[in-house]
Length: 247
Image (cartoon, rainbow, N blue to C red; front, top):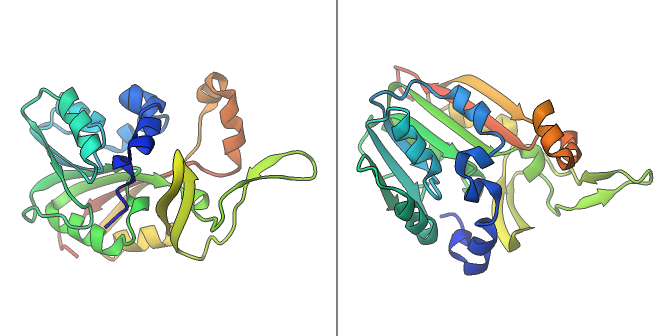
């Protein structure tokens, strides 16, 4: 099971101040790219893993989904999601993303935003997701880019010329990382791009989208401080389709 850091009061208070928390999908700079990867949701049954405040779940019904199930480990996140949701097509439940207790072939789309890097294993999780998707169903998700999660001792470093960069090291050493983000002792798991792709391909998915996201020109104009992020991608966005043969 992933660490339930979001139910820590101090962490939750800090996380709630981020633009993506306050503004929803409009505050997530990678959202336009993720949105372009999604299939037509008219009549779709959607599973939103790591649903957080429910921003995507509510958008999915607005886009035509017939039923959306949001799952999150954090009670605080789910309480906030419930308070913001009035659509009866949306239901939320507390659960470990590593243990999906849903009937097989019960969803047309499984979506997840910035959740899987909290899980120690992706092969088993992706297998469970494949089993819950109908043949031809879509799996769209984002994670922190592996170049971002790689450092065993993550920190910003200043070079002799005065430039500041993220310490990129231990890329091929996969596994647990403990970081100080919002609060101390946040547990995440690093895996390479190769591993993410293998987890998809070995579980009966065909890849149709791979985006190493970076801010575009207009975003950089609005947020010049993001220029410092251009030395490595911030997010990895992947889209796949469940094959008709299964895993």
